Amino acid sequence: MGWLFTYGQTRKQLIHERTTGWENEQTKTYSIAHCTRGNVLWAVWERHRYETDTYERFITCDLLQTQRNYGWGYKDMCESMHPYYYTCPLKYLSMAPVACKEWRDKVREYHMRRRIRLVDKS
Image (cartoon, rainbow, N blue to C red; front, side, top):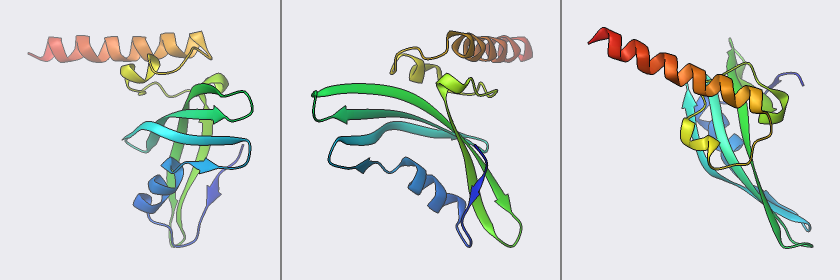
């Protein structure tokens, strides 16, 4: 997928838009957790399918960017696309079933390296 920008949109407005749920006749989808790490927006979503009364959860990664004199935009991805960003909070991994084991391994490696670096600096 490409980038989607909105003229005049602020970063705060974009984050609000990207973390607000939606509903139709078949489903209700809502964010149960979200945060930013730099210009990466991480979110855990829950979808309720009315017909089967089932719930599913998934992790998304939105890259955020501004275009000078235009506004903020995003490029959206989900875990199953193996986004090449690994700053997802570890606790989010336990909130949704695995869609890409390789990506989750990289997220854990990233956090392990960060922990080691923090310990080495003391």
